[in-house]
Amino acid sequence: MFDGDPLPGQGTYNAPMRNVVLGSAERLADRNNVATFNGVRIPLLEWEKLSDKNYFVTINVYSARRAEDNNLLDCNDPMSQRIETFRGKSIEVSCWLIGEPGTHRPSS
Image (cartoon, rainbow, N blue to C red):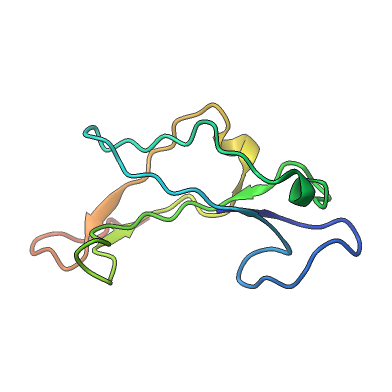
């Protein structure tokens, strides 16, 4: 998901997102468990409302949505980082199956 903070008088209340919502993009992981987000575009009208063009990106990882309503993964998502943190880089997100015998989320 992409969002940011507005120029004075430009945003609207969009909780839990920030006041300028730039949209979202979904990708399925490929055979190598990689999801690529090249070429994602945001609306110019919303872009012009931003007080800081280094907007926020939130990564959420879901599993088995086609077979189960609940997420089956517990991930240490790099939540709400600025776009400059991600642009042109690969970001690794580690996940564990929820409730899988013999597994647990590592402590930080």
